Structure formats: structure tokens, C-alpha cells
Amino acid sequence: MENQTYDKAGAKGMCEQHLHRYVLLNTNDGGCIDGFVEHVDDEMVYLAVPYCPGEHDRAFVPFGGGGFGGGYGYPYFPRRRFFRRAFPLGALLALSLLPYYW
Image (cartoon, rainbow, N blue to C red; front, side, top):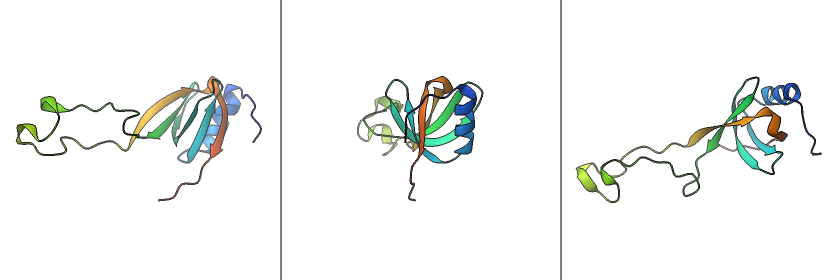
């Protein structure tokens, strides 16, 4: 795939074609993000990005966390499998469809 910059209209059209698909998004600052295209508007593309423990730990642990405190057992809360991230269409360099196996 040849890297080229897209204008907002071209990037929006490309993202809309891949709506609800698993893609690899390359940004013009060198970032690579994989996820499902969730929504596209005139300024942003929204991806459902897989949760990676240790890399994006943003969990809320009530009662101090750690172990089996408070008699509530383990786990205290269900972990999210995906979280939503927004990226500006102007920063989009390339979008590649990735194989997804269930």
C-alpha cells in the first residue's frame, strides 16, 4: 500500500466504506492503531480499540483494591474488552482492512 495523505472528504469516505470493520489506522505522526471503525463524522473517526492490560489500565477499583477486601470477592468489576478513541480525519495517512478471526 502506498502511503498518501487524504483530504477530509476522501478520508471520511474511506472510513465510511470500512464502517464496523477491523482496520489498521496509520496517522501522519507515525502512529498505528488497530480497532473497529465505530462512527465517522465530518471531523473525527471513532475506533473501538481492544483493551491491552498494562498498556491502558484505567480501571476503577473500589474499596482500595488488591486481593479480596470488603467481602466482595474477585473481580470487583467487569473489564471492558474495547474502549472508544477518536482520531481527527486530517491526521489519517492510511487505512488497511485487517483479518478478524472470532
